[in-house]
Image (tube, rainbow, N blue to C red):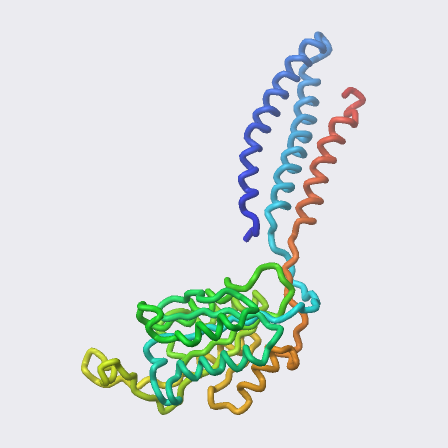
Length: 327
């Protein structure tokens, strides 16, 4: 798939070029008949037609392959080393109703807030942003060095921020991937804080997108395998359509898959290594992996450009070189 498909519109230019070629060919035949006179014009016609055909073909090949070289067709992937200029971290926070559960006191969402605050407090040179998600992801704070704005937001963080139902991890991570500042050589990480209950989206697909964008995802599972009920404002607990009280549990499998496939790591919120490792990665004192390389897809413009220049050469050579010592 071309990275700059807008250049395909240039193919429309070929239409007037072909019309001009046809008109020049017909005019040339008429002029040849006037000049040749009785010099057996049919032989000249044949020679003129063949030369004109190859010359025109060369010109068309030049334009076609020059346009293809501009369109940016992907070629082979190569690793390119780079020196990161800093760290960008986007926190992706689950604000679905299950995050109210108190199997991690006082609630899963409060535990997630504490992780975010600890990472920010111990990463003085980092830039941070926040995305929240339920049925869809929304960027709440763009990437910034102003950690006070992060702290202020955390004081208002609740499951009431979004009204859409569900828990779409895919959408949350996808929104985070679009939230990183463009064209900057910085380490990019997503820290996903969720209980892993996936109602929508595709973990494998979003992990692949993150890997291609050179963004590692660190998943923090907030919750326990035993689970807990989801409290309501009236003092009751959330129930299903049959009236049965819902027990929400930490779903680790999908989070492990997402973290490992993107080059990150999974942590349970109860892990003793959680904060030291996340802070070390964010501060750059611990390398997330062995990658100071990013995968760059080289464009195949040289291949198309060589053919384009070859077509131009053929077009000129056919006109300059005399055929059968005539023209």
